[in-house]
Amino acid sequence: MRIRHLALAALAATALVAASAHAVNLRWAAQNDILTFDPHSQNHATTITMLRHVYDPLVRYDKNFQIEPALATSWQQITPTQWRFNLRKNVKFHDGTPFTADDVVFSYGRIKQKQGTMQIYVSGVSEVKKIDDHTVDFILSGPNPVLLRNATVFLIMSKSWAEKNRSENVQDYTAKEETYASRNANGTSGYILKGWEPDKRIVFAAYPGAWDKPVGNVTDVTYTPIKSDATRVAALLSGELDLVTDVPTQDVDRLRKDPKLKVLDGVENRTIFIGMDQHNDELQYSNVKGKNPFKDVRVRKAFNMAIDREAIKRVTMRGLSVPAGIMVAPGIHGHTKALDVVTKYDVNGAKKLLAQAGYPNGFEFTLDCPNNRYVNDEKICQALVGMWSKIGLKPTLNAIPFANYIPKLLKMDTSVYMLGWGVATFDSLYMLQSLVLTKTTGEDGSFNQGRISDAKLDAMITAMKTEMDLKKRDELIRDSLVMVRDQAYYVPLHHQLRPWVMKKNVTTIHRANDAPESRFATVK
Image (cartoon, rainbow, N blue to C red; front, side, top):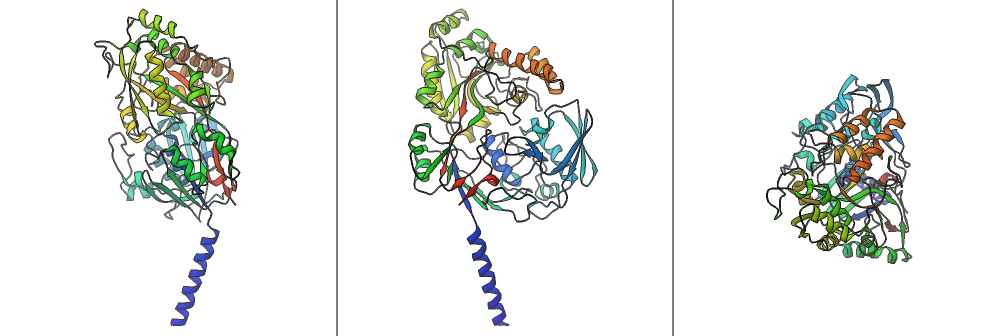
């Protein structure tokens, strides 16, 4: 018996060594951490990137950003307001429970809860009905031209797991609530969450029971948020990292020349911009009493004209930006070069507008800015402070970590703020609905933190949600983008360029949504 036990132990040890020998770890770093592991809580790009390692949607993007099956194998439009999805059979969540239509219905009810910011991904869906265990119908409030693209970020959660762990409700991130689902995860995707230590690391391991087989060979992923640019680059150069996806602009040329590394260039579909409170009757954090300067289009236009975007591109971004005139980047449906006309830098013109608006000596305000989210975010804000000072404004910079920044922004505790907006659907409606449409408790205006409210724009954006005639819809998009630009409701700064740097033995696909997918990666 003892010999048999020894033999079994030896066999187990051999199997462990064999498994370990075949493990391929991708060590990846960027500057910011995720906010939560709750799949329906925060519409934050890095968070969604990590969630997708664990959770699946019904449909997803292929390597060319075309829709392909995921947890749904096929779908059909039964009527203009009814879509049927046939669900994949024999799929199990990481805890071993089967995936069924009940999980889709449950996830729909959960993502709609008002304390989250992900409702836009089921926009226009009024009900999800179970037909049988592997069929669901989406009942729409009207025709929906972007239903499938929205659904790529509608992540499916296990109903039984959520109930078992008292996580039926979405985490209230703004109130700093912690739930089991905000720290743990249970999906159907190709990787299991092995652990998350905030601000230290996230560890994934391949799920052997996954329905989907990866394109590459990566079995283990270690993601490390490293705020310091110098530390991040040093770790890459020393061989401690395989991949860095937000490379300091000042180091890109040097890293291109390193024979051990390679640079994968790409444009990101993200626009960096400045938002302004246009709602409160008195501007917070300002010496202006009894009124709000940003309700005056002349002040907003002066803000715009005082920014030297070419200087930011040349000095701060080292050439790695595209100065922006509109709020969507190249590659987004609705963007054209003709629309993306950058506001001319004109200090004297900006001063005249401020004087006409009644502020010849400028005014004080606080510029809220993240310091670990976007490329050179704090440095850009420092440059803006200097530029606005030239027209007599007196900004005070408040640069803080993104994890603290977002709750402040969600509470609308701000007068002027920086944000970046990527377009998950590659369609302008996503930006217009999130940032411009009058804010409600649902998906409309989910990040309209300046609380822009324009009845004419609301009507056009609402119409494009259900307009199936492409020509008419494109006209609505164009007119809306022009109006947002000409009314200076936002101050677009630039569209980000996003080179990724990796070791020579790493191969992956650059993603315009800046969301690396480990299933596409190979480490030799």
